[in-house]
Length: 300
Image 1 (cartoon, one colour):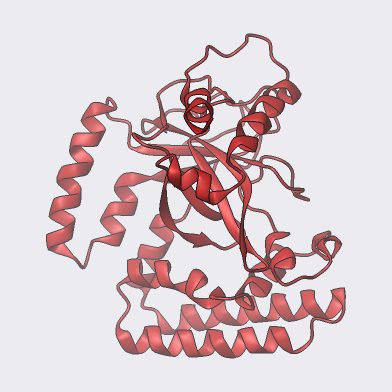
Image 2 (cartoon, rainbow, N blue to C red):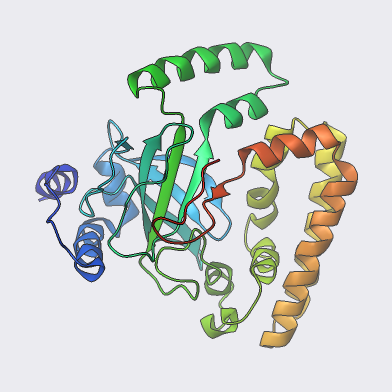
């Protein structure tokens, strides 16, 4: 049964011309139902890339990868990633992603029908240069690997991604993040996310288990911050997480505390990190293509 499900997931069926976005979403959701359990995904050979990104989750990729290369049309039945995140102590499937390698200057892919899908772009060269600037040995290895991979993809070094959320998202099915995740994880009413700022959601995420590690570890590693700076920022974040947890009894209190905590953490990072360290973090950030529909995406 598992082998059949995996074969169906990886089968490169020709997308139906003229499919509506609702038809495409239905196909993607049917694919997702085969792997709502993380154990099944592991047994099928899928592996995790990166950590549990706040408001997003962990990205899991299949054996051999499933990224598209320089194509305009994606197959909803063949996602590149399954996104799992921890909610109430349990890993839960919350989204799929579709990834397409594009060249510098290329527009983002056509993607799903209509103009609702929102693409964001990672620049692999900028990411590698920033992450390994202070690690020359690893940098030399990574640069060689990146050059080989770029050659295989015809010089395509930018990874365009679109998410399809399988749980409600106040910002839409294709938003790059989902502000409801920390509310769900903390056992708060999901309706409290409606109208809340993204900063409030990020601040609430700090109050979850490992919230500060998820918010800081990757960024501070790329920044190559010294141990003292990392230790101090972790301490500040721990205090802010405790501040958020002190009063989650109402929507107003939770959102206000979350937004204040996140703003304070950003100020502390700006004050404690050097301009060079901040530039490295900025280089690895996703570049939203104006967060608009097809034909309104700018190049980065």
